[in-house]
Image 1 (cartoon, helix red, strand yellow):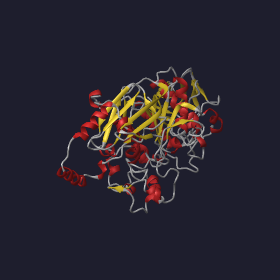
Image 2: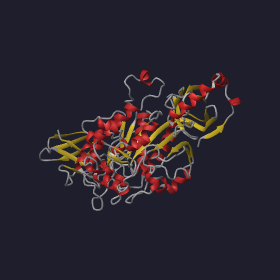
Image 3: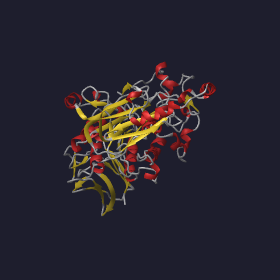
Image 4: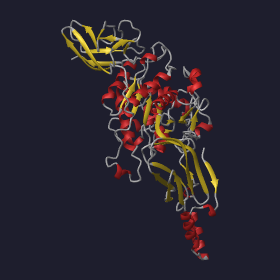
Length: 546
């Protein structure tokens, strides 16, 4: 919520009074007035903008600590904007393009509610109950979108959901939970970048506001607050069924030699995009010949670059702590899409870090390299599901592609969740474990806590005297199995199970000859049971045997 108060000129602070006296003191002749009125007819109506603040700002929000606070909006060109926050007051003149922008000094984490006011000559916008802490963007598809009210532990967790240090921003994308049918007129009217994400306000986390919020995000935030005692704000941009392409900016795709083909021609007929995604979109908008669109065709949540333009671009001038990402199911159904996914995710991460510049008035001077190469990005590896009722044949390879990205992304981490998948449901409901495993990565690398961030990840496999010896990182106090039974999940051909044993922090597999590869968890629904002493599962992998 934004409180808007109409004010009188007598209420202006002194600098504003002086400015408006100067503006009104000039004498105008009848001829000058006539010329002025004639000129008004030639000026686009859009420049007479209603005084407003960007949608991302409202009561109850969290602003990023240790970075300058950036507030912006629109108004009538030439008007003065006066604003105040903490002990500072700032003013600026609204630019010819109707935009205005002010910056306040950075602050340390602060759980005491504060107020921001922004004034023009007629109105004051007041934002209340503002905290200073860490802001995390939650993005991806339905498993990130999965709401708390449908989460496995909801009935128990609701008793603890009054979390005043957690703040939630959850704008619903047009078409949320609408599948297999044509969109209504009201939904079609929202398929533009300005209206795609519904108007939303920040809310303090409690037993009601948490119900529609991303469950993964909630459990992540709760874990961070419990450890760090700082406010955490969550911005949820996830979209059920969405491919990664919609969250990548169109210019990043166009400028990529590998992926420029994804933004050529009508996207609904572009075979370089996931077929299932295009079919879903056609069901929603295929018959809407008069719908919003451009040279790539009709708009939809799954269109390349569309979610980026509607959700990411409007907030990219706002400092954040990092990104949480749970997506991949829609890109894991076809082999070409699986094989390119790692590079696509790499492209997206680099693009976000390139554009989410450090928030300073002179940002290029502050960051001559023009990017934030260290902005944390943590993702969730796909879980497990059987092929009997779902086309998950490529999931082992997909999970391995996600794992390989760990060696390529600085300040990145991956939560392994193959042990909590549902055999016949693409939506496992245990999001508590997912959120907490993501939080472990953040606590270890972002918050510098002495905590094991992950289950075992393979370092290398060597053939020594008739044995394959596999070494891991993140073994903690040693390897073991989740069920305390014999080790399962290893294979030398990706098909038949191979006997393996634990020796301290290594896996030993007897083999008469050196195989080319060793596999682990290489089934869509895996029975692999290797964990470390923290009970964190090992990742699916396929690695060379040296």
